[in-house]
Length: 510
Image 1 (cartoon, rainbow, N blue to C red):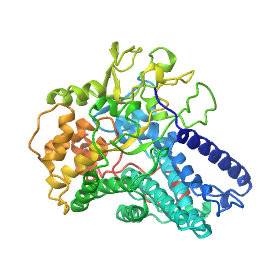
Image 2 (image 1 turned 60 degrees about the vertical axis):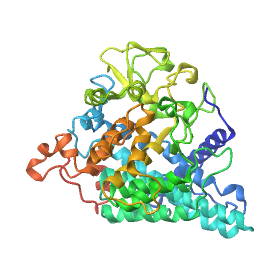
Image 3 (image 1 turned 30 degrees about the horizontal axis):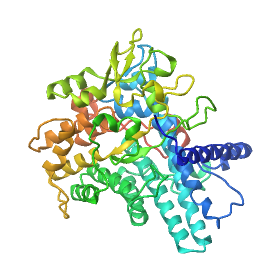
Image 4 (image 1 turned 30 degrees about the vertical axis):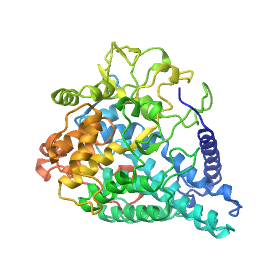
């Protein structure tokens, strides 16, 4: 049974306080919309910056801004996973037509899922930028060096949150803008120029570098899930891999490996169950909790991500979800061709069978398989109605990913000047947990291992894009053959282009 420590409760209360403050601020600004603060920021009059207990409040609000359906719900599943060949829309045939458009690559820029993602990640940027802007005020008002340092560390935490949101935005849309100040009016925001992906990545690396300089290696008991120095290094390793900066990717990943603070759990299954939350395999994990309650306000930080993937048409009510993101036949055949057993048993939840002690019924016109990684047993689904997996922590970056980043960077010619490990050792560490034999490390064996290990964890589509294979594997080059093939980005939402006339639409997405 999932345990609820004081940090879960405190985080939930702070989040609800944040939502209340935001609601009041929004109402008070309604008469002057053009001068309203950006969504996701907090306007607090008369806050006492000398009180050290207030330092973390705006950072907590930045974390809370990540726990939304716009950022990590339907759009996240659709554009990061269902768009690939590894997952189908799922659910029932006529359900969720906007997701179906993305699954079939038959969308336009007016598909509202793109606008949800844009506003969701920019809300995170806004909340994180507000926290960054607040920290110098706290630092100046503190009377001892320990509290001043803590303010700088909290600033680093917020910068990592902002960098990660920008990392999502630049992969999705490429040519975006950079509202780094939290006090922009709506008019100023709408006038921001569009910048290139290279400029976005430069800002991402700047935020991560500044965070690495100040963040602690770890936090004390009761602060599970907080971003630390290694979180920033892990994200930076992935960013460098996307940019083909292989030496830097290997160096950053190697620093995590040599730290000795992370390792794979012995059981692949445990990594995705409550026992594996915030484990030694977790580098970055988005925290969710129903705070041990069975009923209550909808504003509690419950998780749409896992519920959306729960088995549709199952019984009882707390053992069913929306049925989205069903593992495809292509993915299942890929697993079978490799002789996968351990990872297949966890990843593929087959209906009309017993899965980890629970009978999973196949609903009428519903998929035969669901994502077993987000499975939650009945005794953990305490919510009175549709409570399936509402406590599930989203694994945003796992140590297995770090090992595979390291192996890929080295096999593609990168060098780790510290020599933390070898490509063979990193790759085969991941394979051994899956009870697979050691293999010779080539680029293809690493990429295949990424597909198997990280299946249905929202990596596959952008792995194809960064490798330059999305157009071929997904048949997109043929769709765009008259205009130069698939360019790698989704369309900028039409609503955003109406708000900001400086935005120029991406090409070759229809």
